[in-house]
Length: 229
Image (cartoon, rainbow, N blue to C red; front, top):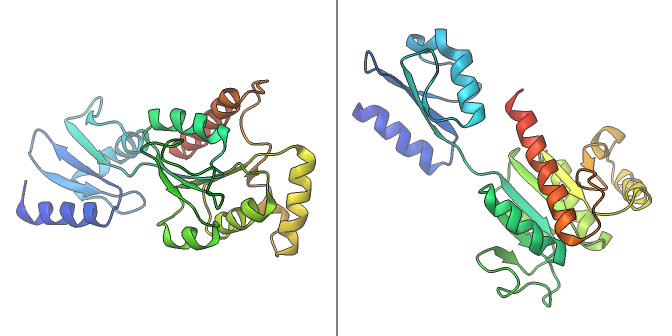
């Protein structure tokens, strides 16, 4: 690998930019591929297959070519509002998929290392920590407290910052009232329709583990939909 290419790779990793290293095993030529950016002319004819492998996070030789792809992608950032029992079950599922998890809850009696070992927890109201957490369109928010004073500010932040997934616990009536409150803050119907509430895929479950499973399933489904765009 050429020194200049290696320097670029190191910089992109430091900046946490998602990219792939594309190598032609026959010629030995390599380049960096980034989504929505032009690719080196030597690899243009393989662009569709490269994009597919990048979106699917598939490393290795691309089928039917001499092209080897190695992906450097950031884990999906999942912010959970509410260190409740459902959250305890939810993090166990999310860990399996290597999500980056942060839990925010201003209620100190819920937030503890005993309840959430090896998970980043923040014992504050959502407004302040959300501003300090590095978020982008690869971030998901899951609000679980049922308390508008805690959930609503986090949901407003997620809507304003175009989180790709926003889920909130509550019944249809609870969500209807939530949308009325959000409209008072200037949010449109189009924006509030982005919120998954009641959160999770309908699997008929009522227990905390079943609800956590339904939320995880919905989150993974939305991620896979994005891959195929």
